[in-house]
Length: 318
Image (cartoon, rainbow, N blue to C red; front, top):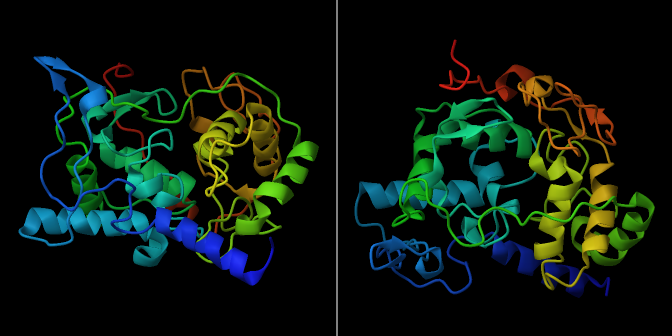
């Protein structure tokens, strides 16, 4: 089970999930997405995201393909903006197409949108930068940079056919029933199910991302919340046999992972400025006391570059 051959095979499985052109069930086409309408009504069950062909025919397709490359190889392509050893597709699996794994397909149609964590209406560029500064524990991209616009082009491409404001099937991560994880049981389950890929110290191995420590996601990432981590684990892990863990087991593993040290998230005290933070947020915010806060590690990147300025919102403007 712990042979080098076994580890190599598991690493290959994970790498395949985060590699260009390797989404399951993909077709080699740059055609528009499968239709999502029944008559004149939007039907998310009929819609499928467009796929990207590596045969680039025009500047738009070149931008889309570059955006795909950036989200799958983020830490190598944008080392100045990534603080840890994660890529965007470490969480947004299968090129951002896998349902129930925070898929990126369809997301372009839902921005700008109001975010209670920011207390403002944010554009998609800000949402992308929240991922860079929080989940990648790095720095924000300039909104008008080629890299940002290429990522936006990819998100727009895999959202073709989704009407503005509409939702798609299996978007986000399923909400879990409220349980309280046991980190002691979670440690045992981690050793049995997760350490063979992520390592016994959670630092990751090869292309496999760190789950805690200085190279992992920050305390301000959604995955640092116990319920969000449990949902991802329950539906997507272990990668070679997803769905085999129970809700309780997923919560216990999540409790163990989220209890471990991770990078700070500068400006996190200003989150949820109108109150209403979820109960499992692991740091203090307005009207909320930290839930099981882990040890916070200093940032490896410029802390000021990790703060995304909150835009003026129609809901907060005086």
